[in-house]
Length: 377
Image (cartoon, rainbow, N blue to C red; front, side):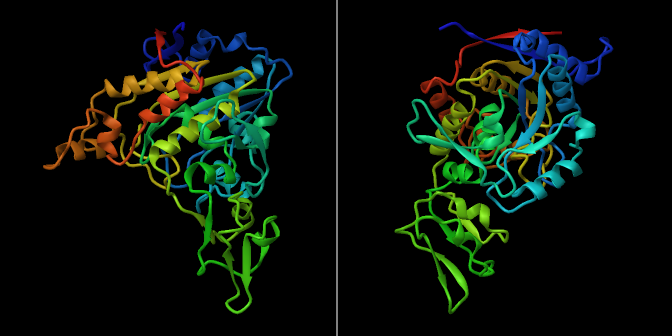
């Protein structure tokens, strides 16, 4: 198989005279994004708006550069992400948009509309077949994401407490899943009710088509009938009080494989392009309400038509870098009981694991781990 092409440039702007957004646009053109027919097409640009309190997410300036380039090519861009399954500032479209605005992402700053891909409550999704899927037959993807003609991922590459790192595959697979889709990837498929949070409003019961929810008139609390529940997760989006939770019971390897399969569902059959910025490499996901100091130095910007090759190239660049002093990674490596995994991400989060994701992505034909790195000065 021919090697995939991954294009790279660093964050240096002197003596070139360009700002980083302009340099990013040059990289994308060098990588061939202008060869895509965007004329009159709806273009979804998937990124993470950052949880409130976290400031390591990508600056809106980078999103604006991608938006402007898409518009120059005749496309109709919109920024998008899907709601989270956990309590936080992005679990429904109203709070998600408010969070995006507070973090600097508005139609004025980014130059295009912002759409939450799975709707108001995270229930507006579509079942997308996964060709060659071993864990998922149909992925639950936000409808607006799938309605787009062209898909572009814009990823902040960082560490992650479960999956080792958060790269293009995680941004796409987990990020484009609806609340039900995220639950499917993270959990064993059956919810439980947190009784102290349940208000007895019965809104969740109206969403259940399988008699999976039983209301106790005595306690005024909802309960899950584990025999009737099919794990569709529609109740999750119906609850406004975070009273429905899913157990994070899957091993990281299974989670990684499901993410790869969800990614394949998102990009199969339509033009797609992928961008990753290895900058502010926080030890944990941007879903955290904090980010901690970077574990690795700022490395650069990467772009490719192949999301798997892109992740592999970013990983290789990170593993070749020196840990940042006084970071979580450096502290772990200095501990008396330190066990060297010879891997910055595993050394930073010893319970995490990432190799199964790339292995499975290659197995199901998501892309190619063998790549040629083309450097743009």
